[in-house]
Image (cartoon, rainbow, N blue to C red; front, side, top):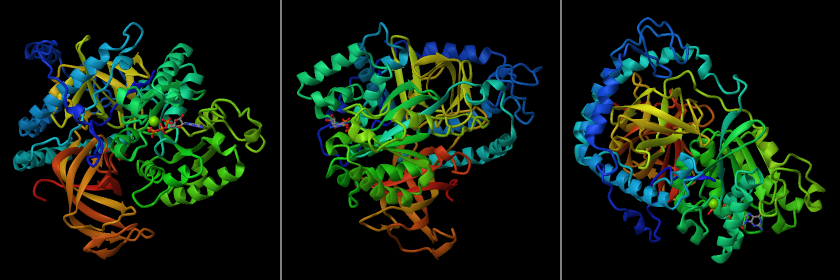
Length: 627
Ligand code: GTP
Ligand code: MG
């Protein structure tokens, strides 16, 4: 069973369908659900009473003074990381949050609303066999992700400035961490002889068959039982949606099923010979690209699903207004995804003709090259999810097997190169979702660890609030584990923190190495195919990891020559399609960010306008107060 996730409580604001229901969740009573401040205080007290001597910079375990290396992970004690730094970080980060009380109240309502929604959905689930992750129906709310009230911005920037100055001091230590040697506990799974986790995004134009493909794979690999599949089939047929049987396994919400459209990313797991695959089934509809961005931003590799039928492939490649085949491919490349499987699906509808496959390969191939995908990193595979051709075994249909001798999809997944992980850097876990499972009294955040590692008992700094929390348990692939490392997609259950401090777009950090929080940034961007030129003052939606924030282009610094990387024009008045440029953007609210050179996942941004992605970019500079 997949875990349905809305990485972002959001969809494009231009979406004019009636989704007002999303705002109708009832409130949530903290006391009633065991979240009284009293309880938390005593937990915090307990944490404070624990003798903290020195905190491991990798797993954050509090070791005794006499230990020269971390008791848990074996990493050598860094003499420059003295005790007390955590409290410094907290003191610095605290004022930032203090300035945001107004917004926090709003956030609290939203989180509580989401919790109620999650709980009501949860009640409908069978708890007898479901694991925690399976039981969690994550929040589905419409709303802006602005973290801070505009009125509080001046004082916020002051505080951010204080934070940044100190952060820079702290970061000098981070730089020195690059040479650190991780302990055995923290080695890559591969080095330990275990299966590596691979985050695989399933993307592509609407209705290309992503959910059908995902559901079918899970069924073939035994992750969805025959009994469950019969149930889906019966239900789908009753609703007159028989062809969506496999998609129903992924599209769990009533609305998704009724409309036959995926709206939020579904997360599911399966094992191949080489990988523990985390499958991220993304929505293809244009209006849900923001959800797709947030989910697919975690991908190590992607399957781009193409509908081979005549007219459908062409619709996905439409230039103006962007067919989502183009937009998704472009986005995946800018997320840093290099390895791409192009699954040319619905081959049954074109009688498995080689000519159609070759035509699509030629057309799409040149576009993928223009996005920056190397030919050697792109694998092309014809298949039919519906007819089960070429998924986990070679095709049994002679019309396909007569000309296609390559690998089936499962083997192609196994042929991908294992992703590189930043295990030896300080913890960075951008928060995708916040969930409270009231039956167990726990607060969980889920997301992909982008750097470092975390384990049960670790203390973490939650940004931008600057609050601390302790890790109570960790779930990976729907099962409990004691340690999670960079690259792992996990649900981390926290205690010692009020849920209002946990928001999607926040980041769990190592206590000594807080992530930056900023509202003005310099970006190096590539302008995509745009109808309206970008000018100073252009309003944009700024997207970064799991946050969307209203922003404006406040300065166009220069146009950069794509080939030489040198400035070709200083301070131009407009930016047009296909230009590379350095720009400065001002956000309505501050967000957690990193310079791209320090952390790729927190340093990649997207600018969108009127429902289209207009530029992809990387953060080259984070501005301090009044810069
Ligand atoms: P979104 O998530 O909304 O973008 O759609 P999707 O890409 O997940 O497509 P979905 O799996 O919902 O399938 C859309 C339709 O295509 C359904 O009616 C499926 O039955 C049909 N479909 C999917 N794969 C195949 C295939 O291999 N052959 C045929 N003939 N139909 C298919
Ligand atoms: Mg779908």
